Length: 83
Image (cartoon, rainbow, N blue to C red):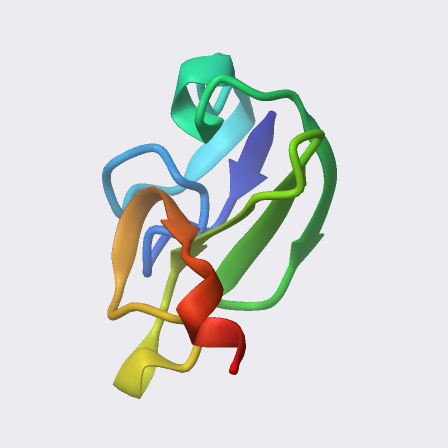
């Protein structure tokens, strides 16, 4: 569930709209079919780790800082981005 400022897509809902009430990000399908275990939020982005150990990010991604450019929906970060 997410709510708040969505300017850069950091809510993961496919748009840049603000949400005043809690809104479901998506079912397990949004996260590769796995349950989300933990989430961390920055001012402009969100990161989520699933039960399967996958990392998903969404929101601001200037210069690929989080493994991608700006994303409006949860986007899996592949292992090659971890060096």
